[in-house]
Length: 99
Image 1 (cartoon, rainbow, N blue to C red):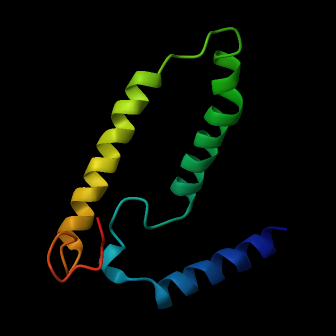
Image 2: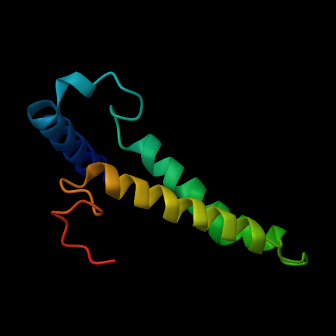
């Protein structure tokens, strides 16, 4: 079993050394997949097991008004971004958008 793990580890390091981008080698979370996998496991544990057990005997939060404001902001911001990145502004004479 240790020999198999050693072969997999050697191949992983061989691939990462040959194909890895040396510019990001010193960045956090880029030298090994294990920190990222650990974060995914902690996230899944908190969402699937810990969170539901904490909220089992509690009433849900009332977030309706907050979500309406948040969604309105997202729609407005998306419209502004669409207007900014579109090559032909939607309200110009050359626009194909009919209002």
